[in-house]
Image (cartoon, rainbow, N blue to C red; front, side, top):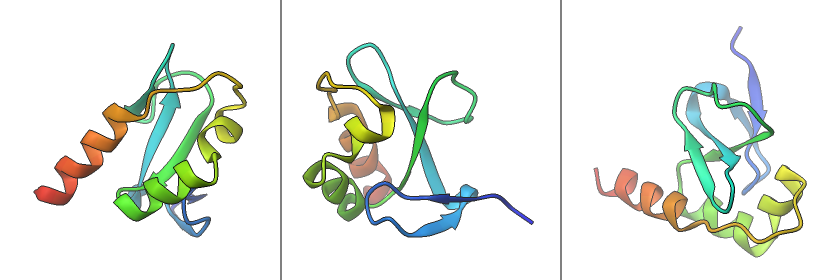
Length: 85
């Protein structure tokens, strides 16, 4: 049985393989392709609507337990690229 994770955008549960793992870098949110980067991670559907929900709800700061603002531009560009392909 595959592990289940919760998307921080839409708050729905899904198999780990259908979500992107993201981690907080020094000043930005980084996509963890192999799910091996150390540190506190969060999970997000590869959908722009889930990204927008997470931004609107300030879910990134809570998920990573940080108070500093994180640049989400790399993540947004990655999601846009995935939607185009």
